[in-house]
Length: 211
Ligand code: TMP
Image (cartoon, rainbow, N blue to C red; front, side, top):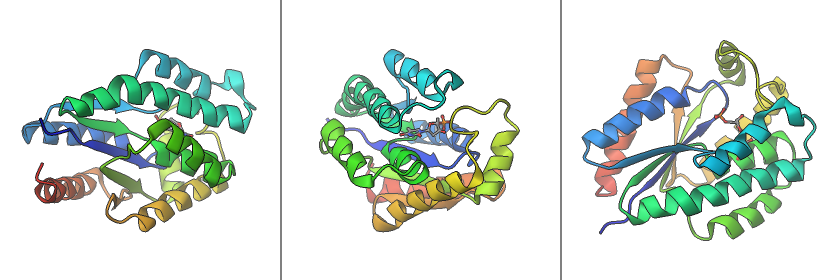
């Protein structure tokens, strides 16, 4: 059996990930794939509990090392229980955020040295990396304005603009360093235009990867 594929959508707050992920899931199903939609932090019962700890204001002021280890604890559980079994069974995993978010938020946003994240990445993932990462990119002010319309801010959403500028810069830098694995999409445009580009990227990628 062909192993499945691991596709990630990531980006700053308010980039429209949820809408595009729903569209991508439908598109891939129509293309004949069995799709497993999931998210990080979360995706398992334990991971969702860890997500709750990470996002909640009950733990404002959580140490950065704790925050990073909890991200990777949720990730370890997610990879072992959901992602690896799905890929082994030939399914396509469609994941809302992954390790780029740790580089961007804990590394860029909060200032954790990126080498430390690389150590955890190697330990937890071994050689498992997404086959394709779509980075939905838009100016921070536009994203925050959109995200602000969605109600109460969690422990990350309430950070200031400069934090998200650093987050965005790391995402863009990582995408630039690995052009084979990343596609950067201008998410500041109307949702239909973004959807059309995402569709074109997926179609092209499916053709190239013989999927
Ligand atoms: P979401 O709002 O897109 O579901 O993501 C939850 C928050 O978690 C978001 O603000 C980004 C943050 N996050 C990190 O800080 N590091 C990570 O590794 C991941 C996966 C998410």
